[in-house]
Amino acid sequence: MPFKALWVTETNSGTFERNIVDRYIDDLPQGEMVIRVHYSSLNYKDALSATGNKGITRKFPHTPGIDAAGVVEISRNELFAVGDEVLVTGYDLGMNTCGGFGQYIRVPASWVVKKPGNYSLKECMIIGTAGFTAANAVYKMELMKMQPDAGPIVVTGATGGVGSMAISILSKAGYEVIAVSGKSNALEYVTHLGAARLENRDYVNDLSQKSLLKPQWAGAVDTVGGNTLATLLKGCMPEGCIVSTGLVSSPKLDTTVYPFILNGINLLGVGSAGTPMAVRLIIWEKLATEWNIKDKLSAIAKEVTLEELNTTYIDSILQGKVMGRIVVNLNNL
View (cartoon, one colour):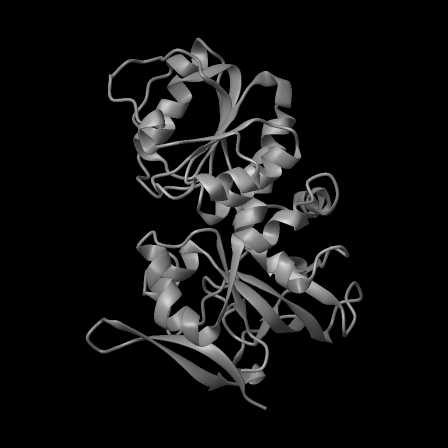
C-alpha cells in the first residue's frame, strides 16, 4: 500500500524540486522499526534539506523531517511492541535517512523514545527537536550549578522554535527570562510564555570593541551566534553560563579569552541530534515532570498539512517569518 511523502529531487540543471508523491515501505532504508507517522514538525534544518542544502543532506531524492511521532507498526526489538506510541528526534532522521515528512519511517530501535504518557503525539511534535534543544540547554546550565537566584537568563531569537521553548522551560523552572527579538509584535507572545520582559536585538549587539561589559545577565540561551553570542559572553555575570544552540546570524565568533579567564564564564554547546540516549531519556523525563509546559504548547504551535508545509511554510521559515512551531499533520492524506 502506498503512502504520501514530501519528495525532494535534484534536476539535471542542479536545481531542486519538491512534490508530494506516493512511496512504499519497501523503498525505505533498513531498520528494526517501522513507524506510522502521525505528526512531524518543521525545523530550520528541514527547510535547508528541502531546498537542496548538501551540508544537511548529501544525496537526493530525499524526504526531510528530523522529527516524527507515531505508532509502531513493525518491531524487531523487544523493547518496543506493535501499537506503542513513540517519537524520534535527531540522529540521522531527515538528514540522510528519509524522515518525518512521510507517513512512514523505518529507523534503528536505538533512535526511538517511548512517548511520555502525559503528552499527546501532537504535543510531542510541538516540542520536537526545538523543545528538546531548549531543554538540553537548561539541563547543561544546571549541570554547571546554575540556579534561578543567580540572575536573569537571556533568550535570543525568542519567537523562534528553540527560543519559544527556552522561555517556557526556563519560566517553568523559576528563572527570570529576558526575551530578545527583532519582531516588534512579540511582546504579548513572549510574555504569555513566561518572559519577564522583551528587548530588541540591540540589547545584545555591542559594537564598542570592549573585551568585557558591565555584567547584566547570569546566562543565556542563544540561537543567533555571531556578535550576539560575543556580546552575551562579554556581559555575563561571573561564573555564568551561555549556551550556543544556533547560528541564525552567523557561525563566526569573534571574541577574546577575557570573559573566560577573568569572569569564569562557561560557554556550553548543544548538539541535539547526537545526544546519547541515556541523556535523551533524562531530558524527556524532565519535560514530562518538573519542566512540563503542556499549558503553553497551544500558543506556540500552528498545525498545517503536508501540502501547506510544501507550498508555504518551508519558504517562510527560511525567510524568518515563522513564529513558534509548525506542526505537520500526516493523518488522512
